[in-house]
Image (cartoon, rainbow, N blue to C red; front, side):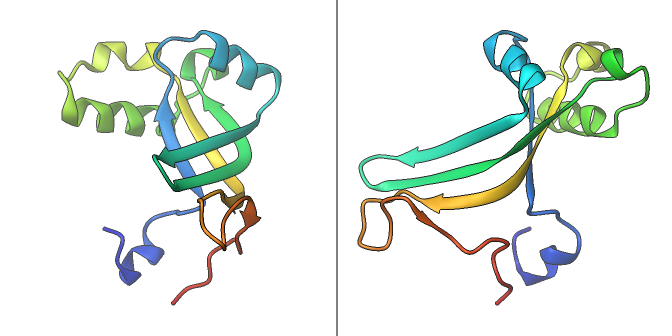
Length: 120
């Protein structure tokens, strides 16, 4: 899926997820879509993504939301399928704007990485 040919069929500038609780994160993104996502694998690996969070919710927008349908369907591949609950779970699409290497290495410690990442 992530080989060189995937560059033509996968958008690597965004990350998708579902909102299943609609609590503090949901309220924060509705008020301000600027967000940071941190990936951390102790003890040394850490990356920070900065960007904008989009909320795709058919109930709020009144229109068919393809991201919401797709991400709910993807969720159901690993859990009990139930299309009846799809409208209850809005989709997040995080649009990456900046990437930082926060790894505990000489090249890390908050170094901004080149983005978009150049093709090899």
